[in-house]
Length: 83
Image (tube, rainbow, N blue to C red; front, side, top):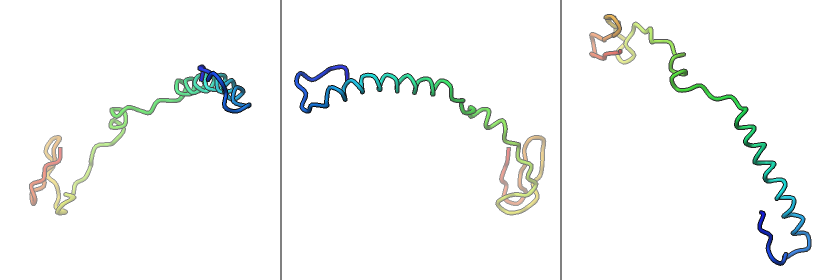
């Protein structure tokens, strides 16, 4: 917007150019301020840390009772292993 055409096509065109020369930099500065002040979303690591571990005791596929061994659970019917 800083480059003015040599001969304006309409009588009100120079006014429009000067309004844009002032308004666009102000809008860019306000946008930058807004982006710097907005809160950041939590990271994926923080989101995953807030999810509680699975505490199911029933297999979601066959409905049999899961065998709980240390940190893993396995289904005796279908053989599914849940870590």
